[in-house]
Image 1 (cartoon, rainbow, N blue to C red):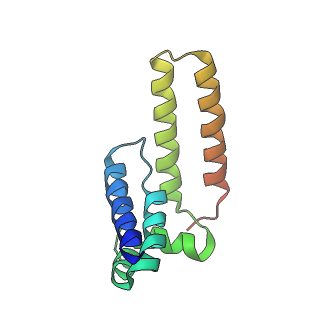
Image 2 (tube, rainbow, N blue to C red):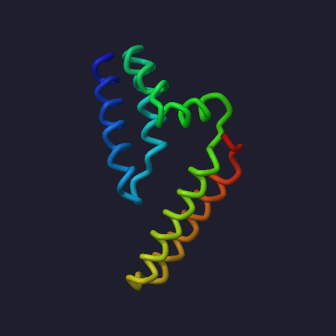
Length: 117
C-alpha cells in the first residue's frame, strides 16, 4: 500500500506542475493531495514537499489553519474569470453558462472566505 500512496503522490505533484501553466487545472489541491499521500507513504517525500520553497508554504498554511494566501486568491479569481470569459466568447449554451457560473461562484466564495495565509 505504501508504494500505491507514493505513486499517487507523485502523480498529484505532476498534475500540480502541469496546473502551473494550464489555468483550468488547479495546482494547490493537487499539492495538498500529494502531501496527504506522501504523509502515508514516505517521510522523505513528505518532508521534501512541505519544505519546498515554492510549494511548502501553501501546504503548511492550509494544514495549520485552512488558510490561502492573498496572491493565490487573486490568481484563482483571475483564472476563473478568464475561463468564464472564454466560455462566453465561445457562445456556449445558456444552460451551460448558468451551471458554470453557479459552480465557479461557489468555488470563489469558498476561496475568499478562507483566512489569509
